[in-house]
Figure 1 (cartoon, one colour):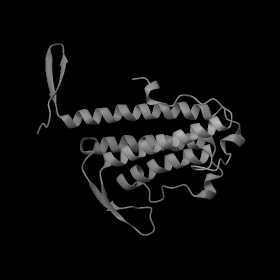
Figure 2 (cartoon, rainbow, N blue to C red):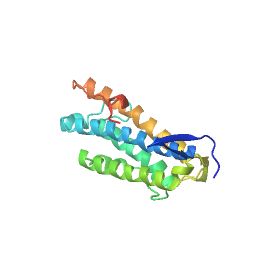
Figure 3 (cartoon, one colour):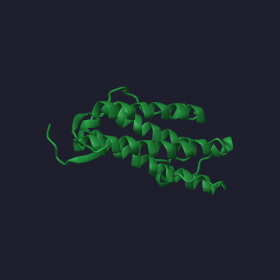
Figure 4 (cartoon, helix red, strand yellow):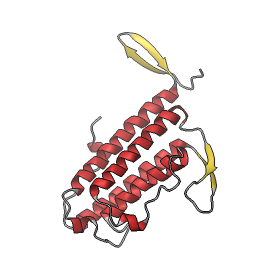
Length: 188
């Protein structure tokens, strides 16, 4: 086994040398747990929203809190569940189905997201930087791209935080005091 960098852990005066790639794997799983915690904070707060406010069209972003949450989940399901894991060919929620989504269904959708993220870590955790080349399964005109699972994981997480910021702004505009959804407020 080749070591690019040695990382030392001292346990009862015993030095353990582990490969650098294992350290990255542990880091990503911990990082995703912080993402889950901030998402949970926002989803729990959404229970306090009046139903009309949850679906209110705000004129920017993905139009409503509900629509934005589904869009966030769809991004994970598309890039990780469909592209990386080949679990579905139709990862995006049709607009006609979106209108019927309630918060509990969105939470179930995020449980699916969590299972896909965990599966990516399980199958690709030691090779998050190994490129995958394949067609994008859900596109009508299939486009072949080459990208790493690590980059797609980073994309889905930053995409979530981008839209989470929009959701918090929507909530604030409606007169609510939103919770802190910053990673700095999570437990280690």
